[in-house]
Image 1 (cartoon, rainbow, N blue to C red):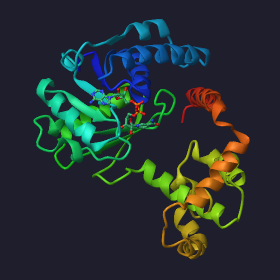
Image 2 (cartoon, protein in one colour):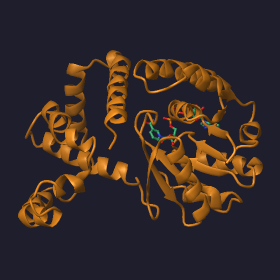
Image 3 (cartoon, rainbow, N blue to C red):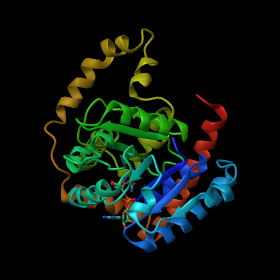
Image 4 (cartoon, helix red, strand yellow):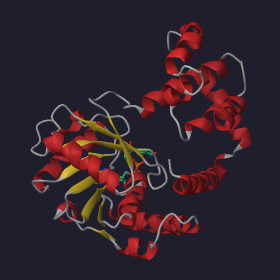
Length: 310
Ligand SMILES: NC(=O)c1ccc[n+]([C@@H]2O[C@H](COP(=O)([O-])OP(=O)(O)OC[C@H]3O[C@@H](n4cnc5c(N)ncnc54)[C@H](O)[C@@H]3O)[C@@H](O)[C@H]2O)c1
């Protein structure tokens, strides 16, 4: 592979990807439809890199920053690149039009991963010359401290492109997971949706406050989930492993899961209730500071994982 990677769409996620790639020694070319976004991205990248330095999560921030440049056009960004990470707006019409533009100028062997949070790549790549080299590479923001990336091929993505994306993600320090085929929401947002649905249901029924439901994750289940998933969790919680857990608790779980059916959209009332509780504790004006606090906690956690390994 060449050393050059293109970032297409330099907003929140595109600029975070730039850190991942530049930190791993790649030359990163930024392109955005709004030129000012690239300048802002560089400012954000420099700030975030300074914080990463503080946590020992980047070796040479200055050198990494110097590897990131702004391209004057889409063609310039893609020239000589063999991987591009698309991170434009999460809108099917925008991505469809943008991929048509990419198709006109993409090098013949370019693999293009989309950061799309839920729109499958088949929606915006059908019929394009580059289609066999397009797939989803969905991160959890910010990818420079959260390693997961969901790799999701379309029905027409070639195995070689999946492999290239997979290998590249490993090379730059990400942890890819592969879906065999497209499904709305992929894995991460489907799991998140299931948990959110139950959280809203409990709140709406007046079983607990939003604060206590949040705490059940942050002070409880989430502590294990930072390093093992739901299957490993139950496998470790019965002497005979997962089967034993299912025999002991499966029927009981099924009873209360059934009670929740069928799923309803979140009601305006429960959204207002949860929002009100959030705002009592956190005025919206403090949100940027709270986001910065969250990102610092994530950096501390990333450092912890770097130190202890698996
Ligand atoms: N924000 C998140 O937490 C998050 C997490 C994972 C994945 N994603 C996905 O990443 C993608 C980008 O999200 P974001 O939060 O960075 O959005 P954003 O609004 O911060 O950035 C999008 C950027 O794309 C540019 N853009 C839009 N249309 C364009 C076009 N036609 N040509 C060139 N540039 C164009 C915009 O100018 C903007 O800078 C979306 O698909 C989103 O679902 C977001």
